[in-house]
Image 1: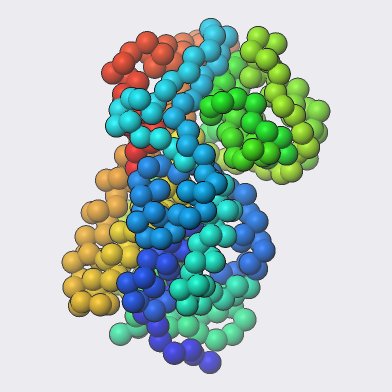
Image 2: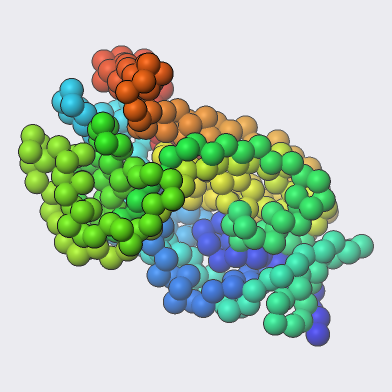
Length: 390
C-alpha cells in the first residue's frame, strides 16, 4: 500500500529531523517523520548537551526554545588540568563573546516532538524505513513491515548508518573519513556537577572529561583502549580512574553517585562530498559524522536543518530550486570548519601513549599547545571563536 504523497518525508526523529519538520510545518510544507524506535526510546536517549549560540538563535526565532530558555544553563568557561596545574578559560569574554547553553539533548528532543505534534505534524514511531528511491516526480520510501510513503522530497536525518546515506553512497557519492584512533568510555552518573565549568584533564593514563548536564546528572569521559568492553569497568574502577586523572588529591573530590549508563565511543569523523542530490537530501549525522571532542554534532544538525528547510521551502512553495542547488555550498564550509576545530581539539586532549621517541615528542607538542592556550590571547580568541562557533 502506498500512502498519499506529502511534501517531505523525513527519516529520523533526532534533532536534525525534528528541527527540520518543525520549520517546514511553520512554513506551510506538509511532512511526515518516520522513526524506527518507539517514542520512549527516542525521548530517553541521553546524548549531547551543549548548544552553540547559533543553535539557540535558530530554536528561539522559530518558537522551539521554551524548554531550553526555561531550564538551560549558560556556560562561558572551561577548565584544563594537567600535571602542570589548572587554569580556567573564560571564553565568553573572548573571541565573539558567545556562550554555550547546556540543555540535555533528550529534553530538547522531547520539546521538539511535543511542538511538532502541536503544529499538526505526523510522526510514525516503530516504523523502520528500508529503502529510498527517486521517481520522476516524487521519492518513495519503502517501510520494512510493508507499505510505501511517498513525498516530493526525502530528508535523510537517520544517522550515519541510515538509508539516506546508504542510498547516496550507492549512487557514487564519496566520503572523506578519518579514524582518530581514540576511544572514550562515556559515563552518565546520578550526581551533581563537581566543577563549575566543563573540565578537560590531560593525564599520562589518558584524557578525562567532566561535562555538566543537569543539577543532578553529570557526564564523564575516560580515554580507554580501542575494543574496551564497558562491562569491564565497575563503578569503583570508574570513580578511582576519574579521581586519578582529574587529580582530586590536588584539586578536591568529585561528587559521586550511581552510574546510570556506560558505553564506549570510538572517535571517528567523516563527511559526504555532497549532502544530497535529486529528491534526497541529508542533514545531521547522515551527512557527516563528527567526533565528540568539541561538542559540534547537535549544532551541525540544527544548522543543516535550518538551511535545508529554507531550501525545500523555496522549491516547494515558490518553485525556486536555488536553495537546493546551493545546499552543499552553504553547508560544507561550515561543516569543515567544525571538523578542523574538532580535529585540533582531539590533538590537544589526546597525547600518544608509550615511551618511544615519537610518543615523547607528541606529548611535548600536546603540552606546548596547552601552554600556548594558557598564555596567548591570540590563541585564546581563536579557541573561543571556534569552540562556540558553528
